[in-house]
Amino acid sequence: MTKHLRIAAILFLVGIFFSNALLQTATILFFPFTVYLIIRRIKKEEPSLIEVLIVLLFFCSLISVYISIEPSIAVKNIVYHSILLTLIPIAHLVKTDDKISIDLIGKIISILGLITAALGIFHFMNGAERSYGFYGGYYTLASIMVFSIPITVASSIYSQKKWKYFILISILTQACSLWLTFTRSALLGLFIAALVTIIFLFTNANITRAVKGKITLASVFVIITIITLLLTSSDSRLNPLLFLSNPDLSSGRNEVYNDAAKLISSDLKYEWKNILLGHGLESRIILFPKSDYTSWESDYIESFISQGLIGLILTIFIYFQFFRGLLHAFSKVKNTDYSRFALGLISSGISIWVISFFSSQLIGKTSSAHFVILYSLGILLTKKTQSETNP
Image (cartoon, rainbow, N blue to C red; front, side):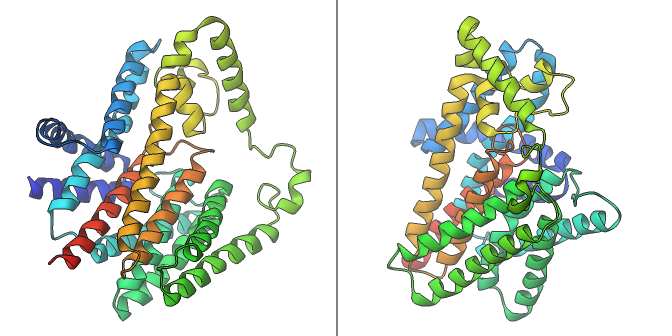
């Protein structure tokens, strides 16, 4: 089983950067293993809370297809809602496969991130208004970059000298490509992640002074760079000094928010069932087919309107459990060399969480794969620490 899980995991990781088709194929390949592991854990051991929440959210999505006024359209989104389920087999793989290492994963993500970022820069230099990667969307590229940049930075710590030079090139290329997406939420995510990292470092007494100094310096550099880029930009969307000259800071999202407010108001008056269960998957496309926006542009609005109060609560608890898992991993490794990699995972998670308020990340999109990898890497860190402590 391990060999087959490895193949699916490689396809999954490559699919995050290169191909929606590969990501969906890997998700489908994982599905029988997911079912098997769920049954086995129910019979022999207690599943983790995040796994229970993810399974419940998946069943919630099945119900959302059933209640939709256009099930034939809603069902097309079910594969995307299956991506989170892959956390179960991938977490199992990192627990049982000794061939998976932090160094290996860091190198793979550094290489894939570099290739994707280079393509984004190439598209921009060829006349694209914003950089975009293999997926064709600048927002998708921005999400990929904030996922991979902190991991790439963290992996440089564990690499040999020759790899450090390569990783430095990868970091600079990814950072440049991210800027050229001109995505405010991604820049805000990295900015907040850097601030939180600094606070986190100085509230944990057990972290060595050397680690604090290096990571603080890197975080301050990120903050200063982002502020400088924003304040020198001529784009009124980005430069806070030019905000007053921009008639629509939401970049058109007010249309989505107004539609959501009207729909919720109507449901509160006439359709309480929709408040509880939602309007079904792909509700934005089905209810507002003429809109340029195909989603509700937020994990929380998306989950509430498509899957109701139940879906919203599950989404919030999954986020909570996700960060709880990463913090648990950090608590296990904070006195080891892996502490910096754990901080990279947390920074990546924070960045994506910030984006989730302005775009769907966890709900029904390929970006949910980022959460699967980050959480699984947290499990891998814990495993490595335990194996080195108890050889």
